[in-house]
Image (cartoon, rainbow, N blue to C red; front, side, top):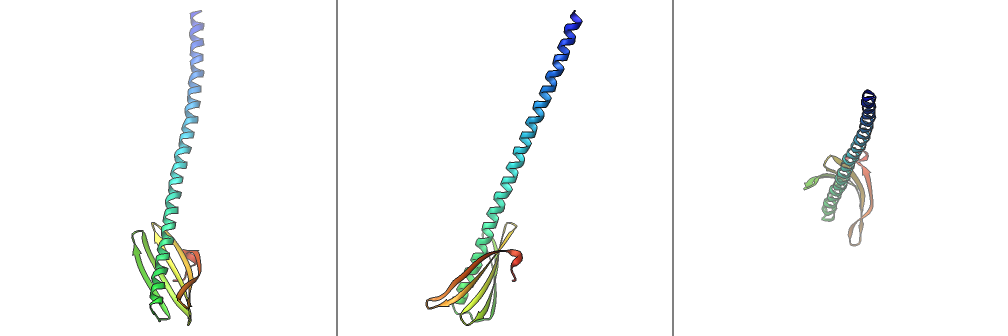
Length: 142
C-alpha cells in the first residue's frame, strides 16, 4: 500500500513538472517577443530622428544657396557644402533662366540621407522659393 502511494506521488510530481516547464516556456516566449519589439521600436525611432535631421540639413543647404543667390551670385552652376551639429549638407544650384534657379540639396545625419529639390524665382522683393519637394537621396543629381 505504501508503494502505491509513493508511485502516485511520483506520477503527480511528473505532471507538475510538465506544467511548470510549459508555463516557463510560454513566459520565455512572451518575454523574448517583448524584448524584440522594444529593440525594434528603438531602432525605428532613431531612424526617424536621423531622417528628420537629414531633411533639416538639406534645408540648411537650401538656405545657404538661397542667401548666395539673393546676394547676387551669377555663376551658372554653384555647389556648396557645409555641416552642422547634426550632420552635413551639399547643395547644387543651377541657373535655368534669368529669373529662375533649380536647387538640389542632400542632407546626411546619423546614417540617414534625404534630399530636397526646390526652385528659386525672382520676385519684386527678391528671390522666393516657388517649389519644394522632398526626395530620396538616390533621386538627386548633385
